[in-house]
Amino acid sequence: MTITFVGHGYVGLVTAATFADLGNKVWVIGHTFEKIENLKKGILPIYEPGLEEIVKKNVLAKRLFFTLDYDKAIPESEVVFIAVGTPPKTTGEADLSVVFEVAEKIGKHIDGYTIIATKSTVPVGTNKEVKKIIESVKSKNVEFDIASCPEFLREGQAISDTLNPDRVVFGIESKKASDTMTELHRPIGGKRVISNIETAEMIKYASNAFLATKISFANTIAKISELTGADGPSVLQAVGLDSRIGSAFLSAGGGYGGSCFPKDVKALIAIAKKHGYDFRLLREVEEVNNEAIHSIVDKAKDMLGNTLMRKTVCILGLAFKPDTDDIRDAPSLLVIKALQELGAEIKAYDPIAMENAKIILKNVTFSINAQEAIKDSDILILMTEWNEFKNLDFKKLKKDMRSPLILDARNIFDPKLIQDLGFVYKGVGR
Ligand SMILES: NC(=O)c1ccc[n+]([C@@H]2O[C@H](COP(=O)([O-])OP(=O)(O)OC[C@H]3O[C@@H](n4cnc5c(N)ncnc54)[C@H](O)[C@@H]3O)[C@@H](O)[C@H]2O)c1
Image (cartoon, rainbow, N blue to C red; front, side):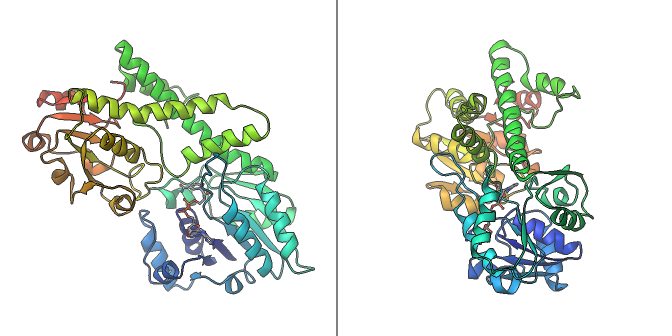
């Protein structure tokens, strides 16, 4: 099949490359000349493990093409996926301007039956708006269908998630569209959920909101465990063993972040409000998350004798989670800004995300490795659980640090081992 993706971010590029690898001819439309030229040469705008290889392989095999021109890609495509960003507005609602802008361009270029499928996370009703836009600009007699095809991949494991998702959701209006989408996804694993458009749109928000709720619940249990003397991680581990609950997303830490949970939680609160419902539960999930992030700053201050003035703080990990360069809404950014406001000097290291962080963070010393960042610091704060941080040489660190303080915002270190070496250790819920 010949298909197009508009947008080459974490969702667009990964799914486009995967569909090309499965034998389809895939166009990717971007809007920046330099990025498109780089992609043709195999230089990617994002980091995702394994992606560079599969992009290069499929460009070489002439299955994956990058362009700025809608007239090259759209007329020959049976399915066109919209995979552009839907960032939050100041009101919390999703900004749909790019979705609507590209829908208009797609509509102007379809010249035979085409399915326009939205992968971007969009509020209920958006795909019907997309339909109206396409209807108003397309040539007479050209038929089309819309589909809502929300994406559930996780950055860091996006390729395997695309090939083997838990489920593939199609919100669809016709049998013809259902048959084509089913055929295109035939080599892809996971259960099929075929629904109306509105249901598919809501499934995505409900899923992310539930995962965010699980994290905030875990952080609340961690907080109460700290107050009562229970061991939060042990409590949560045992709770997660219940098959009705499950252990995924039930870990305490320095709050959730990233490009999806914070914005999708806000958007669902805004969707509910627009329809006259106050989603109190989700407002509290957000509040608990903010507290979880700020509690890291409070703990650091406490460990340093109630002042951060001129203290050197080493931050290990900037990405919102391991194996990605994505720092959008990463808790590390909020923690660093708050520490700086309290007078701390920051040294930071992340294996992949430093280039993106340099654009946002000011007055931070970026180090070439973890050892360098830790050297001469007054406290080490672990913000992202990259594998390479799990086996630090603590004996050496103790000699290198000004004071032996470790704040583990992801609970990856063994407290006993560290305390036995003479460190003061704090985790979350421990
Ligand atoms: N990142 C994730 O893990 C993830 C997972 C599931 C769903 N989603 C959703 O998928 C959507 C895309 O997310 P993402 O992380 O890939 O975003 P991203 O910011 O990485 O990518 C957005 C892409 O849109 C392109 N774009 C912006 N304006 C454009 C325009 N005018 N014309 C053409 N292209 C344009 C950008 O160049 C970029 O390639 C969002 O709605 C997001 O919520 C993301």
